[in-house]
Image (tube, rainbow, N blue to C red; front, side, top):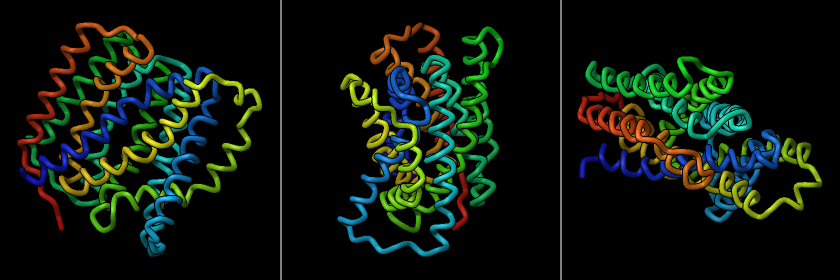
Amino acid sequence: MKIETKGMLIGLVGVIIFGLTLPVSKLAVEVFSPAFVSFGRAFVAGLAGLIYILIQRAPMPSWAIIKRMFLIVLGIVVCFPYLMTLAMAKGSSSHGGIILGFMPLLTTIVGVVKFKERPSKGFWIASLLGTSVVLIYALIQGSGTLSYMDFLLLAATIFSALGYAEGGELSRIMSPKMVISWALVISLPINGLVTYLTFQPEYLSVDIQYWSSFLFLGLFSMYIAFFFWYEGLSIGGISRVSQVQLLQPFITLVCANLILSERLELINFVFAALVVSSVLVGKQMLVKRVH
């Protein structure tokens, strides 16, 4: 198996978990505040990361690496979860999932600018076509307009792309598990404080399905998924493996139907096929990496 293919398959496991995030977040914000959900899930993930570090007796990363991890904290621990959760309080997870389809292109751009990856022209064309398909779908579903929710999600994708690219590159020099674990532990104090301040006594009587969704977001969406995602990015390259995430909107659509009974129509499958095609084409295109 080619190393790029292996990276894409490993990354796909993370994308499947990410695909569940919007529907599960939509369920959680039915009873919890967006701030409690976003910072609380990071707090839960941070506790899991701390336990893992202690079990592994991992040494403290160098200051140079810790400074790079602050970009991961800003992108995927703080800004992306909060903006995404705010958006879920305002609209459907199905629509939100499509907007997040911009993430692969943005992650590729970050990889090119920060880490000097060199996608070919054919790769860029395939990426832009795939992203255009996602945008066309969003405009069709939104009757030709983008909503306030769309802009929240677009901002969220920018921050997530920064965190994804930085974490994928750091995973080339240290364990992907340690990258996400240390990033979460670094932010544990602020996440714990905000979780405490936003907790409401009535949450204690909330049904188990909502607490289960909260724990899923913390342990899987915020933590375990990154074991696979960062490893895939480090093995196969940020530009190429990030294209697997073009499948995430359609994984989200299916999950939204199963979890929230959001309607799934023929147009979803048509656009899913178009996006999958762009991923397959992009996979064949040359991406040079500077080592």
